[in-house]
Amino acid sequence: MKSPTFLKDKIVGLGALQYLVSQWKEEGLRVVFTNGCFDLLHRGHIDYLSKAAALGDKFIIGLNSDESVSALKGEHRPLQDEVSRAIIMSALAFTDAVCIFNEDTPAKMIRAITPHVMVKGGDYQVREIAGGSHIMKSGGSVVILPFLPGYSTSAIEQKIIKSNQP
Image (tube, rainbow, N blue to C red; front, side):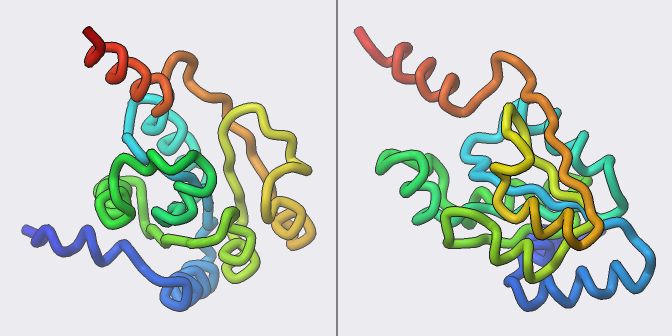
């Protein structure tokens, strides 16, 4: 039986991720990438992530750092630190690698690894997706998956706040 440390083996820096991706591509494997904060893992995340992972052979999650989440979501976020979030993401059976990035967008990571498929959720337009044009110029594709209605970290957060009010 594998020890729990194998989860941390999936959490890699950008240099190690570049190496992994080059190996996977040499093996002819289709590499899929998505990114996000994934602050409180919920059913909507699992739905989205499992559908994204199914689009290829290897699945990478770019994870916003704590600093990046705070810049995007406000000073009260993240609710969980980046190491905890990375370990949770790496525990998903369909996840092959997790890489934390500190910038507002994963564009630098995307340019460094050039996955075959970039996946985002929600109502984005392809032209709005950081790194999307790079993927398409490289012959890859950008896929937008709809969110599962009624499931979001913000909605869960509001529910918790309301339940704690007198």
